[in-house]
Image (cartoon, rainbow, N blue to C red; front, side, top):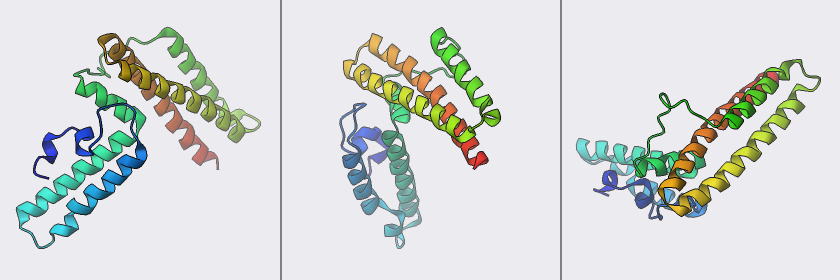
Length: 179
């Protein structure tokens, strides 16, 4: 466990560095790591050992959170390749995608005035889930190709996923508000 902080998240869980992750295997390795490194096991240890156990548990939790989520996993894989998303400074985006975003946002704004607002939200959510699913499939292929062009396209796809993820969260928040 001493070198837990020097391992990348995939190594930590004994997984190949890949966009494709077997979530069952990830969960099994997570439970095993938690079992052996949980801070409760170090209740009678020194202060330093207890702090280290807490840090290890936090690292394991963060790694698990990142690897189980396709968007976070994509961002992490890009970071491992030294590719920065430049979220604040890079404003270039596919015009067709931006138009789709505007249309989706207009649809979301119109939900409150719709005859069936929850039905309208369900339709929007279904559209976003389909788009996210398509992007996840694209990322799987792009990361498998492992070349500069594929990484550039993966970066663009991850950025698009971030937009869709944010929109999905807004839809879910509005749904809770309307219920």
